[in-house]
View 1 (cartoon, rainbow, N blue to C red):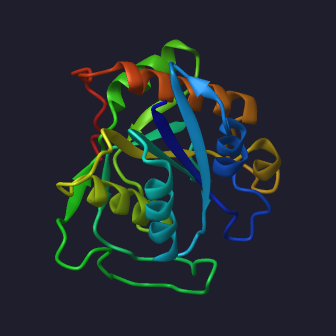
View 2: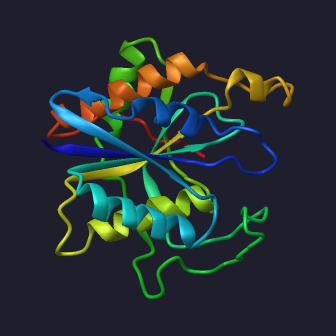
Length: 216
């Protein structure tokens, strides 16, 4: 059976949970649109996260990979457009590393675009009543690190992965309660959004040509 790999992160930055893993873990052994889902938790650590992702890809041999991460302060389900070749950490990772202005892949391209149908996804999620948007930046922390690492692997001539990219999700309500003024999204809604994302991606061969850009 064809497989899809979905990853989430361990908690970081003093949080007790990470919404990406809380939701991704619920997908274990499920089937969507005739494919089997495999899930893995990645460490929130520069270097180790890409190594763990590559190990999971080798084990699962997926046709598609979707990586998910927490973006506290975001207001919706954010489909990332681009991963850039730089680590510039505002806070240390879970091993205490804090790289500044370091390339993820020495000599690699400056950036890679997502290999997900980002605009079809946003359209489908909104039609389902789920707040969603195209995000123009995945940051410069471990989430962007993993997105770039995934897309770099997909760019290699021997890659078997057909589609892949990164999604950022808001805090869970219990996290937002500790960050007054921050938006949140329930685990139920996040799970619905992620399942719909997988289904839409599997069935979309050409993305929509609609405006989802930013003026600043």
